[in-house]
Amino acid sequence: FQPLNTYGNKFGQSRELSGYFAGSCVYFVSADGALVFVGYCFKKGTKAFEDNFQFPHEQSTRASNRALDYSVVFSETGYMGEEQWKLIAHDFARVWAKHHRDEHALLLMDNWRTHGCIELLIFLLQRNIHVPYLPFNSTSFMQPLDDILLAAFRKGLNYRTLYAMIEALNEGINFSAQDFVDIIKQVEADSFTKSNIKKSWGNVGLWPFRPDLILERFRTVGTPGTDLAEPTLQHRLPKNRGVRMEDVQAAAALLQKTLVKPAQAKKKRSGASVKYKCLLTSEAVIEAAAKLREEKVQKEKLKLQESIDREAMRMLKKNEQHEKREERARKNVEREAEK
Image (cartoon, rainbow, N blue to C red; front, side):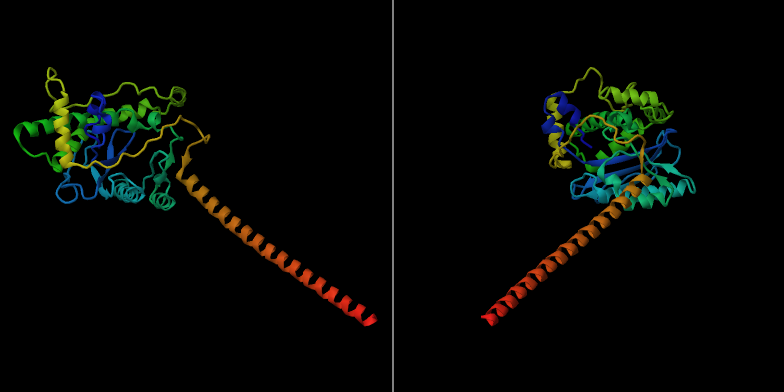
């Protein structure tokens, strides 16, 4: 959640404005167009986030007819680490068992290091949730969330947050963390529609499955997704009123009082590459981890055996040297006796 990032880029102040950071989120969307589950992670100690904000318990979106299930966790930075991801994944498994008992799920994920927790993968497998991984460095053009959904969500979050803060400044009212949470839920309802979700899966070639399109996107890394959706914004300012830098600066000052500004995480970008000829799955990761453990045990045994052999060789050489000294002493005694 970086509400002013778009305007920072527009006015050449991306470093100053993109740092206003409220937290992070992860969305679970299915190929049939449903927003199944959402996990939110906020920074500990953020004003009003931990104790005072409320998520609506019955959040119906256009993507799903039933209440949206979600999980809220906290971290020291607001970024989602392994501990937070485990909590969210456990909640998702609970929700999946609640609504889809005895059915299997394919949970498609990228190669973020926390996604490879062996303990968690075993836990998910025991609950019929299988994890195939996207090829390395292909998230930007193979993950459905990165095609339409998050682009629409970020754009809507920028618009709604800025205009809500401008309205708060003009009317002399407070802009609270709860207001920001309400904006998040509104933008979700506008962005994660059934048509947007299905279109995102289709644009990346995963469902319906189109291997030719996937290979073509691999060959043209960096080409933006096609048919990007415009978020529906109920509170957008009139088109004849442009966004002024003064408005953004005033909103940034207000946002600084409401949210946090931690140090920016460095992002590394690299070209797409395929290290495996098939999708890496949770079963394969668990098997590879077991193999690595076995190799580690074998290496430790080999290292121990080598240490034992070195010690035995050292003792053998020491005994040989001792025997040679005794032999020289005996010969000296014999020569003295002959004299």
